[in-house]
Image (cartoon, rainbow, N blue to C red; front, side):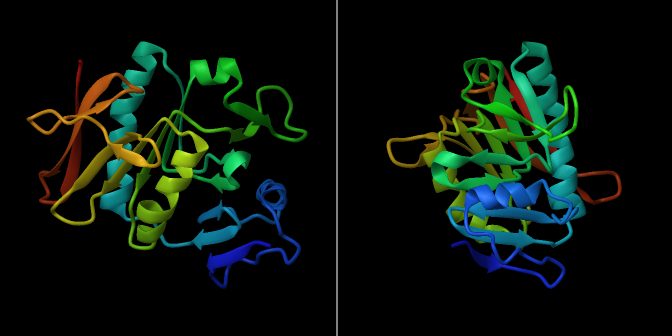
Length: 227
C-alpha cells in the first residue's frame, strides 16, 4: 500500500491508491492536481506544492535548457523534455517528474523507453515516458533536499538511468555534479583539472558557474567544450 511522505491540504490522495499502476491511472485523470510535483517512489507518494525559486531554480533551469538543447539538436541525440514530463519505471516502482529529461534516439528505437499515448488524444499525443531515460537533471530546492540527494539517486541507478546531474544552487558554494553508474550506485563522472565534468551521454565537458548580472542578482553560465 502506498504511503505519503509529505502531503499538503490542497492535494487529496485517492483512498484506493495502492500501487504504481493505480498512481499512473490517477496521474492522467481529471482529478490529478494541475500544479506542484507529485512523485511515486517505491510505494511512497511525495507531494511538493512549494513555489519554484525564481533564481536558484527557474533561472538556472532556463540556462541549462538553452545550452543542452543546442547540443542535443546539433548532434540529433534525441528527445529533450522539461518540467511536467512524467517518467515511469515499473521495474523499480517509480513515477516522477524530473526537472530535465533526455531520451536518446537509440533508447526510443530499441524500445528501452517508449512514449505512452494520451487516451483519446489522437495521433502524436503522448502523456508519459515509460522506461529509464538516458539523462535526468534534478535541481535541489528547500523542500526537495532529502528526495533529490538521498532517495532519487538510488532509484534512478536501479532503473538504469545512464546519467544523473544533481545541482544545488541555493548557496554561494554552487554544487554541480554529473554522475555515472557504478557497480551499486552512482559515482562522479570524470573531472578535468580545470573543473569541467564529462557527460558521456552528451559527449561533452561541462562546468556550471554562478555569476552576478547587471542588477547584482545571481545568474548562471553553463560552459561546454568538446572532447
